[in-house]
Each structure stands twice: as structure tokens, then as C-alpha cells.
Length: 419
Image 1: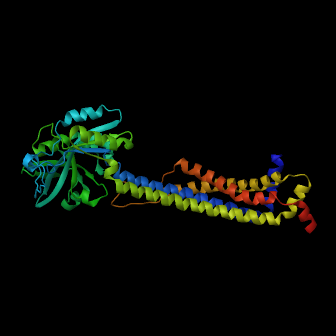
Image 2 (image 1 turned 90 degrees about the horizontal axis):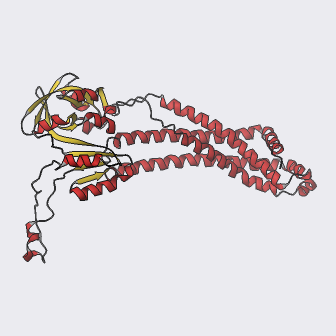
Image 3 (image 1 turned 120 degrees about the vertical axis):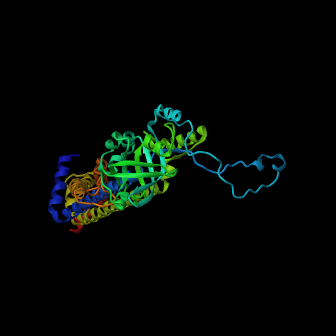
């Protein structure tokens, strides 16, 4: 089989029907270009949404949940053990929100090889006071530099810097919604009143905006020691522990182990965001389904064009076979034509897809809900380009194989007699 001769004949056939060949190549081009553009944009958008939720969510969240005791005094009495006991209006048992032995638990978690980081947190319910304005809210006491390393808090600080909070023991990063309601700016002071009645003047060093109004209207960040002081507690008071793992898939197992071993409530990220992950999977399925459909439609176009080309090239096929070309050689001529269309159309499609993706990434996109986002999100993953060219070649191969197999079986004697 002389490949140079076969490729030369294929090129001659394609050039002789340049209009049909161009239409077939353009079908592949637009199919691949649309696939790359759609996949890059949709996965970029999914990545943005994942970042808003998952990047700010710990892989394992540990806290002490206040709940009614499962065992009541009547269930411990032997004379009532055989009966059906109904207890109404069960009250939670007397306990604190703090995590007992939190410091040893933190040290244990940080020593685990699977743990990227474990940081303490203190939640405090407060009232924000500015002049005559009094707003109900929630303050999170954190190790701000660890919070930046593990949960990218700096991406949501629209004014100021997290390091300013780390350097200022009496500083606060105020929620953007709160700052608007109280007409505050960086450098101003806001007073916090605890539920016990104490007043704590804090200097505003930054504004935080998560993109969720119900959070930005109540939530702020202070240093861990400041939150402990607001609650009137010591340095060992910790209400929550947030754990970040190297592999998120290990979160359910770790959460179960901590719950069983330490008698604490541990919620893994998959449980906390099950509905969100389902939505992401559905969006990805729709993206790939639409993209693959476009490529399949392009493949049918190639099949129709090659099928018509065989009928028009009956005389050429008869001459080729009469001059010594085998049926396999004829089949490879038409398969090579399909692959040439796939290569040319696929490469042009990748170029167009990349160009459109870059153009989209420069389109301005500003919204108050996402202050750090300036342009549309695009994910230029090389995998999309590899999938695109492989699918282009596969689709054109199968589109050309059936007409080529038909050409292989043509009897040149019947064609010549007909002439």
C-alpha cells in the first residue's frame, strides 16, 4: 500500500469538490470551536461557583451541638423498662457551646498526614453600635493568616487587607452590608455589645463581602483573642474547629471518626453541600451533552458529503480498481479524505475555540454580589483541546468508514459496462 499515492489521490478528490469539502471541514470547525468555548466557559463558571461555596467551607467542621439528651430518667428506671414511655417537651441538657479539650484535639489533627490545616474559631453574638444605630450580628474570631492560607479570606476583602487585622488586636473586618447600613469607612470605630452587656470599641481595618447579602449584613471578623474577650472567656475557649484536608474525599471518614471518638458533632463538606454538588454535576452533564451533540451533527454532515462523493466518483473508483488498486486501497483513499477533513477542521476549531475563550475572558462582568470578579470566568484547560481533536478525528473516521466500505465493494466491471 503506497501511502503517498493514496494521500495524493485523496487531496485531488477533495480539491475537485472544494466547496463540499470546505462545508464538511467547517462543520467540524464550528463543532470543535463551540465545544471548546462552551466547555471552557461553563467549567470556568462552575469553578467560580465552587469557589464561592466550597473554598469557604471547611472539609470537616467540628463543634459541640446543643441537643436534648437521648436518655431520660424514666428510661433508666427498671419498673418502666418494659413499657412505652412518652416524654413531652424535652429540654436540652445543660452544657456549653465550647469544645472541651479543644487544644489537644487541634494538636492531634495537625499531626495527621492527611490534614492540610486545622484552625480554631470562636463565634460570638453581638450588637453593632454606631451612634443611634443598633444592629444584631455575629462575629467570628479567627487566626486571620491561617484563615487566608486555608480559606482565601483575602479574596473577599474588598477594602483593606487581612494582615491589617493580624497586626491590630482591636481591629475588625466588617461585613459590607453592615458598613453601608451604618455609613462607616476604614479607620472609623464601631462599638460591639456582647449579650452580657459589655462594650468593646474596635477599629475598622477592612470590609468583607461574600456575595451573600444575608451574611454580609450580620457577619464580621476579629482576632481569636478579641472574640474570646468579647465573650468573657479565656484563651482555651474555642467554639468551632475547621479542618482542611489534602484530599476532600477523606472528609466523610474523618468526620465519622471524630464524632465517635470525641463525642462531638463533625459535619463533612459533602454532607453540608450535597445539593450544591448535585447542581454542579448536572451543569457539567448538560455542557458535555450539548457539546458532543454538536460534534455528532458535524459527523453526519461529513458522512453525507462523502456518501455523495462516492456516487459522483464511481468512474474514478472503477478506473482505480481496473489499474490495479485493491478494494482496501480504495477504502483507505476515502477514509484518508475524511481524516484530512477532520484534521483541518479540528485544528481550525481549536484555534477558533481558543480565540473565543480568550475574548470571553476579557468581557467585563461586574456585580455587587461578586466584588472581586471583573471579567467572565473561563477555564482554558488543555484537556478540552485534547478531547476536541480526538473527537474530531474519531467522528470523521466513523463518518468516512461507512461510505469507504461501500466503495471497497464496488465492482468496476459493472460500472464500465454501464458506461
